[in-house]
Image (cartoon, rainbow, N blue to C red; front, top):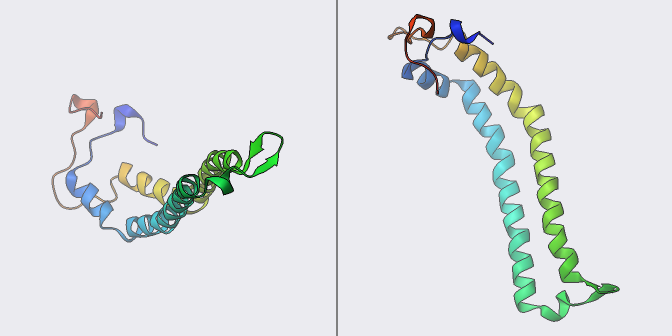
Length: 131
């Protein structure tokens, strides 16, 4: 990574070229192939829980052990599934998307996406700063 004094701002054209690159298309594809099905699965699981608690109260009040019923266990399962999905996403990102994103960031920082347009402002010469 370049030092802050050596950085210059990227131009909109550089961002556009990075966005139009095959690497970015692949990055979006990999993210969507994980995120959309996982989101649908989680929402379906949550909706099932809500519907069961609304329309099947006898089923949800089935005692499992002691004062713990099926509704409590399924409710706790919502929390567990959230943590499992988070773990799966982190593993997916580390393995499938972060390497592409890291490579693209390095290419952006080294201005490999720069076209023939205006170059960014050099921060070390008192230009604009990054937010």
